[in-house]
Length: 307
Image (cartoon, rainbow, N blue to C red; front, side, top):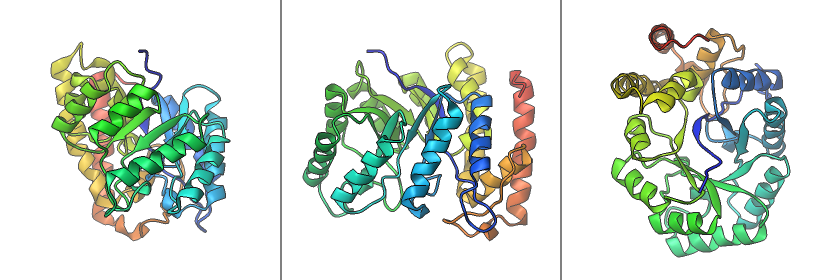
């Protein structure tokens, strides 16, 4: 079956003004930056977007702004699935679908609490699918507020019945990725790996793409690896090694450092975030991003990427 979702997709960060409001001119600018650097789609209103810290209307307005700026050039998916109450979740998912995004992304930990079992998880998922029958759904194993990995059985069923078209895999495990890729083979469900260290090996196994935070720094380099890993395997492994080490940046001061990086490469925005104290971007963290930019540019020159 032909899959409609593949390639390299950023998990979009939300720019804010100095007084903490969503900066919509910067939202549009960063959307253009993603497209100019080769993205195949955009995951807006996600964990990187600080969706748990956005008001309901802000989530919808961001999705609308991105969809409008994209103007059909690439696909746009969005989540905003943050409520605790199942009925409220259905309402927020339905409203997000009304923005016209290509798919609405469920968050696995919203369907059951940490202590709740798979039976309840499956019941709540089925309720959403039943009450929103005309919505195209993806699913994200969001690690906040806790990581709930999906069972292979659930994924295989959703793939077979066409309930899901997109999965953002956060297992960070080649053995789990291999099992999942095998289980959804021949279906319309696309598996996107969020983890850089396992990405190249998962692409070799048949994963459909990358969807992760480091696309906010160098999505064009991810795209090169995605497009060339079969034809240039040795160079792709070298690129994978760079991307893997660079991805340690995520653990330092993200998303503040991603906003600093955007400023440095020509997308003006403040480093204000609602989820983190901007002061975590200390002098050392700034030097790390500056070094990363120089390394990115050197690798782009080697790969022939002229942005």
